[in-house]
Amino acid sequence: MRGHIDPQGGLFTYFLVEERIPAEHPLRRVKAQADVVLAAMSSRFDAMYAELGRPSIAPERLLKASLLIALYSVRSDRLLCEMLDYNMLFRWFLDMSLEERTFDHSSFSKNRSRLIEHQIAKEFFAGVLQQARAQQLLSDEHFTVRCNAD
Picture 1 (cartoon, one colour):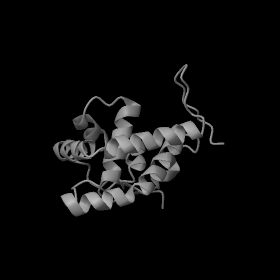
Picture 2: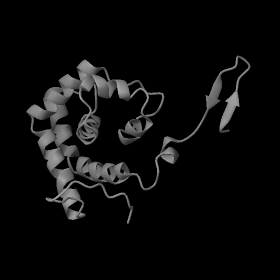
Picture 3: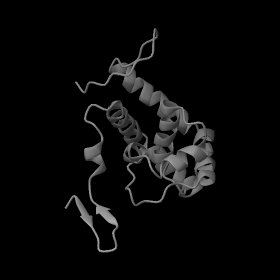
């Protein structure tokens, strides 16, 4: 069922967010690259958990959220956390369901700072850049976003 109006006048709609993201959207490629880098880093996260305990926000999401901040010039952690309440594209990129609660901005900032202190963020961004270079998606002359999926 795609849509249903209940007796109280509310609208219930069911859809897959994946279907709403255009196949050629540039973030699809970035997400795939980020996920490859994160998979390669999983043992580093396991080691951090053993030493530091489980953070309230998974490091994979913290790093991917940091990537969104950089790509979309989001001016603050607070604004990103607010945007997660209504931005389906960001939620999809972070593998969050529509029902899932967004991050508390202070927890987000604190946990992300921990990743920066442990050089995890630097390693992640270097890996994403390496993936982009390998696919010839970077230029020293200008900034472009390639939208084709070939």
